[in-house]
Amino acid sequence: MLNKLERALVRELQEGLPLVKRPFLEIAQKLKISEEEVLARVRDFMQRGIIRRFGAAVRHQDLGYVANAMVVWRVPDERVPEVGRIMSSFPEVTHCYERARDPQWPYNLYTVVHGQTEEQCREIAARLSAAAGINDYQVLFSTAELKKSSMKYFLEDEW
Amino acid sequence: MLDELDKRLLNRVQTNLPVVPEPYRELARELGTTEEEVINRLRRLIETKVIRRLGAIFDSRNVGYKGTLCALKVPAERIAEVAAEVNKFAGVTHNYLRDHEYNMWFTVLAPSEEKLHEIVQEIRERTGIQEYLFLPAVKIFKIRVNFDLLEEQDVE
Image (cartoon, rainbow over all chains, first blue to last red; front, side):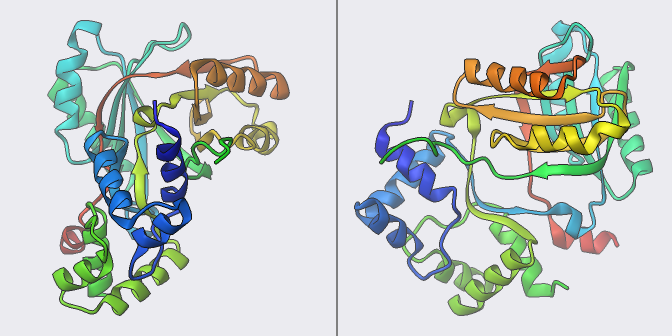
């Protein structure tokens, strides 16, 4: 659980790093702490995995990765760790999650694959299938992005 | 479009930025340019939405939030209306239409498990959609969001 100061720092950092010479100083002044303390806490957040990455989130669709597919796999429970590892090793796979099965939906491993075309995405799925020996899967293409936003945490907090 | 320095800058900023008092000056040094140039280019890349966000990308689980993937079977003629209801929730961060009978796929984040179920329950009540999937992550094997732009350029 994050303490109050940590939640306030998350709230500032999620607005993006200020484009000024001393961005951490600007954040520090808002929180009434020192620049060194902000830097130390950001490093601490990175070490604890609270900040996964301290960098830019880029829109891939603008950069030539026009096709992406969610491929869902039905994997026997005892093979999930091995299959997850195999699929994650493919550079075309950007996300690989195990998810709970739903009574209406037997798939339990989810990969997102990126390619230049839908055809390429299907080929990647076929290669993943062959590599992992999992043949029960579906390829779901996105036809429209209805929402894409960054999560804003702790907005309800008073500070 | 993007020139060579933009691409090098984008490649660089997709990994971790230097956590130092003057991070843009450090980037400029690495890229062989000026601090002003780095700041101006980053501002332009953000304005033109090539960069969606610059700075901390949080791991929602380690922040203490709970999340799930959900899917709804939405009749074609109700997609816009249902999407509007779903997207009203701040905790819904991604929502995609997919070519499947379960056609609306979205992620939900909330400060607790209870709140998460409340949001999904409320979406079902407001939209009246009965057929839905609730698919929380059990284990994350991989999340990678940065690509090597220069390498991509070479392939083309």
